[in-house]
Image 1: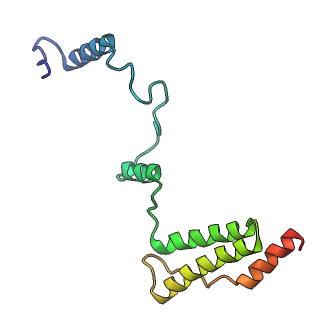
Image 2: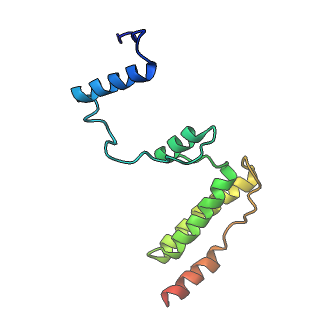
Image 3: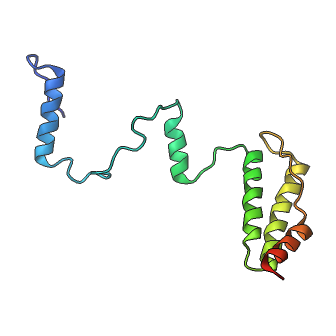
Length: 133
């Protein structure tokens, strides 16, 4: 149980004394993050700042499903361009096309998807052309 603040002492003085005594005992010596700057210090914060930071740290997305699929389509196109083999590129594109078709059949939450399935034949032809085949 903590000690009560003496009536003769101001709150600020009492708190500073408690912190000094804890430092002398070594209570702050092994804290995680010791010696590192405080993240986001000086940045303005909105109401959900802590939730956004936690979601980023956990690798979660707070995008609506339709926007997330748009992002995944762009990632899949880039992955297909950099694929090691034609079969890998084709597989990446077929997988994303299956997701696009499913989203067209039953629309996702969020803004409209506005994406058609990728033309796999044209994308694979472009892949071959980049590879010089």
